[in-house]
Length: 444
Picture 1 (cartoon, rainbow, N blue to C red):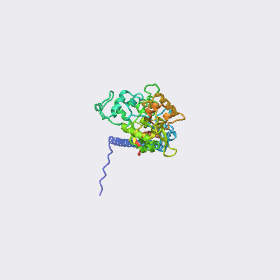
Picture 2 (picture 1 turned 45 degrees about the horizontal axis):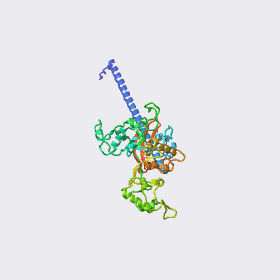
Picture 3 (picture 1 turned 120 degrees about the vertical axis):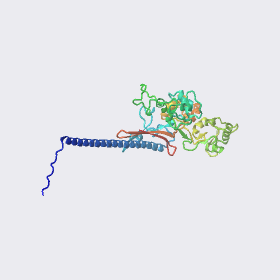
Picture 4 (picture 1 turned 45 degrees about the vertical axis):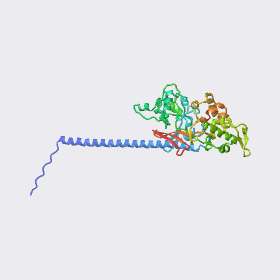
């Protein structure tokens, strides 16, 4: 039996072969494009991952600088704070410190000692005017501030709704295009000044837009070659001091100390102690330590200097300004554990010293000369009088407005990785508190 012959195969038309080839080529092309896109996306994601990693590293480098600064503050055992301290400037500890992932620097505004160079250290906030507690007279003495800005600050922080001539109260802020609430209390951050009527970025930063106290490229807006800093350079918010003496002991409060405390701790004679209590009873309270100079013992009382019950121990029979200059740090008229911070005689720039009510310009010159000399820095507020930097009248006016110790500092730490990515951490630290950090801000 014969099988039927197979049917002959027919060749595909040429046009169909060409279409198939074109389809294959399109498939290959599309696959290539898809693969290219996948590779590109993978590269982008990889680059983003590297960037994120670098930013994390920069952030921790900056945090390392903050930790370094806090450690140096912790180790500072001096009872006086001045530019001679390591926290103020120490290139070994703060300049381009290298770590396995990069480096950090801790920087602060330049001052007259740095001679136009970058300063590596911390900013003592007691060297600035406290806008939370400063009087309108002191605020008005800040360089380049306007009367409207002074009024705006006071209206912002006071509790009433009575606008000063150049200020603004709640109604003004509520009528803004983007309204917000007025504080009507103490400012919480330094940058809060930017919310106050009359204070914009130009007034706050001036030409010193990066806050380093130097005239950097692009900052000389008026072309005169001189740095014109704004309010941020002369002011602070987080400032106070513990109500303690240099040894860390509570001060003797003239408004609640009894006769025993006055005779045992201050070595007052019983007659002088009785006179202090009588003065307090008549006036209601001491409003100033300097009011001790108004206390007089009754006629026939003890002499200005008598002998105590302990051999060799001299008692105080009458208050003199020289005695006050020596013992001022041990006395207070306030009950609070924390007091509004005073201006540090050793670290405040000339412009800030000039804002102190009752301190003439010549005295400011003498203060700066003394602290820069071999006799400086000031070891106590009483040195103002004993060094002849000020006379008795000026001493009485300013002694309770100044200090030689500081508690709150600003740390600005910049962390940078090898690729150039950096992060800046600004921290306000209170070395008397636990935990010490009271403000933290990161910028990339």
